[in-house]
Length: 278
Image (cartoon, rainbow, N blue to C red; front, side, top):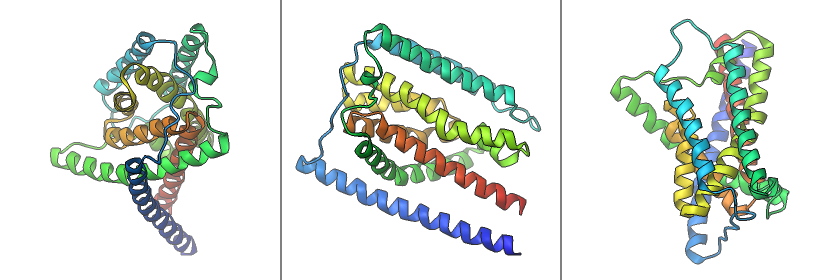
């Protein structure tokens, strides 16, 4: 009984925090629009012009999109089949391989981590706070996108495909797997994905096509590597991460936003896990 009461209290606190984040995000969006209208909001731009060119970025993007397309076509695992440690390890290895390829291309172009925004134009503490600011702006958009996605899926009679990491955290009893997935979601995934999608892909796309097209295309690719049920919410998250990067010229900003977003997701999943087992 006491455990249920504690869960109710925790659920109330999480709900209150989510509502507060949505309200804060709406306020920050209005503030940003007003600042842009007055010309007070300056975007630092990339730390230095990327010299690796559009073609390597498109080729690497084609590999990422192609592999993910095969995964989408294959569909979810058959009923009763859980995500295995081997499958999870393959996903991590693939991400690390793509990040390594991107870094190799940057190095071959005669540039280093500085061209990707590490440390970047803006001091790290300020970039960190800017990242959280843009994450809050994404919260109401992501929440709205999730509602729209759910309504569309229900109208079409389609089943929501759960993220494999979320499935493990909710269902497995293996403590080692739970800890490994949580660490990957909060540390490994943000680091690899920000290097690839914001530093490498967005940097090349922005240099060739400009800020707005770069944000849209890089965010669309970022969304596509996630389950279809997450495409629209992840697109808005990717756009917020790209704008945080553009605002500061530092990869620290989208890294901070990505870390915080995934940490919140893990906390929510742990709460749902506790509720389901109470």
